[in-house]
Length: 580
Image 1 (tube, rainbow, N blue to C red):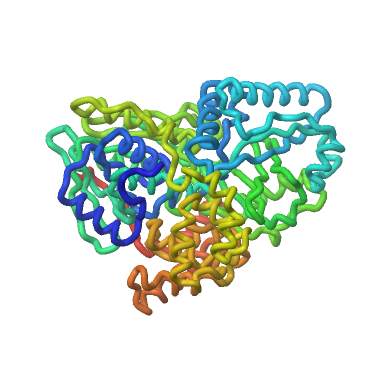
Image 2: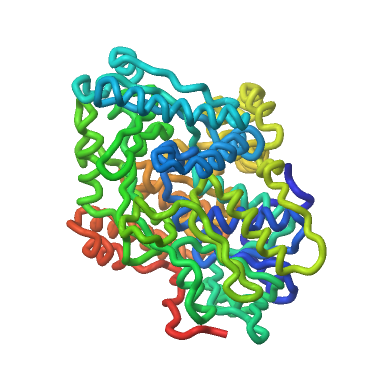
């Protein structure tokens, strides 16, 4: 369901939002445009609050675009007896599949190879059975089949690439997956449709105070350097791994401490692994997923402490070798570094605990009210973002006068979701009327849902946009333009890395697609030839730096190489002193 306003997030909408932020007072200002911040904005807006959201970089540019792209209950948390977390996540999985985002979240099967006879099948089988039982008991299993036990021969029919001697049998179960960055965008667009004012490349550089109370934020528009004061009755810090940095601006010791854990993922072509199912493998530290992703597989993840640049976590050769070594132990044709199309690295915001191992730190979230007028939310996992957002806004409500309605986001369908199934059923008619192949229509429906009408309208106006993008023919030229006009993209990297996933889905990391993409969006952004050239040069330098970092032997070297290419629109260095 869409609200009364427009869900469009283009250059004009950003400018209008900044004007309103400078002149109006809001009930709540959200700092952070990842999945948690987006969820908070939507929850608050659908309770009838007046909301603004600012993000220092691009939406979902941190953790929320670099996850394993799974919506899951957390099967491994059952081993830790964390039944409440699993139950909560399975409930959310069901809501996402059935109500909130049927166009974006879809079921995906996984094989769990067993390496020991007897006891392991009973042990793992009991865990998976409990997983399914928790799901069925909450009616959260619709669209997700129950698990099944397989012999080794049956498993090899499903996944012929598995090495016969590496396992004794398998269990197949189901979870779900999503394009994480695209999902964030749809949450933000839904929040915009309910009146939220949203601006990226707008950095929080300080807090407004009246005595002890926080009364808003001071932000800097990083595109032109202007500063403005955004007044609000409550401020929510939803910045993930940057939580401690924002706490520093308030002054005093923070009440939430977040540790960054690096997880990297490899992307390889689908033909390198012959399987009709994803695979989950045990490692000595955690688990490793082999996840189907269109014409590719995503393999991940690692789990190591990261103490360097939070904006650009870098994968090292050691990280890549670790993943290849572990997955190759189960494959009859080993993968080599030459099989790797793309690599991406992200940081999990884990709540610091007594354990020094990041894999044992808490994935549950915490909400704190360190000073009047400020709410902090940190921790958690992507799947349970909506619960995190609800809890944060509940804390906001305590600081507001008057009655505020309870959360209703468990009944709000995201932009593009209402009527999706009917439109999917009409995909052949859409193909015939638009002149696009039905495979293209299916691709657009899975990315935009019913908002496909926007794309088809754009193509009707400009038939040249119906063709595939040179160098990345999974995507249409119209999608690049739409990213700039409707989806809040501000720069070439935003489009190639997050609005599309060209930066890790192509062998050249998007270099051959970059020039045409930049040419298509230059008129939307008003770029001169010099500015277009600068965007292209920066993207090429970023790709080169990332490739170089992936040949380094350790994190320190990888970080130094990646930092060699600063952001086109740099954020401010951390302040040494608290700011008003």
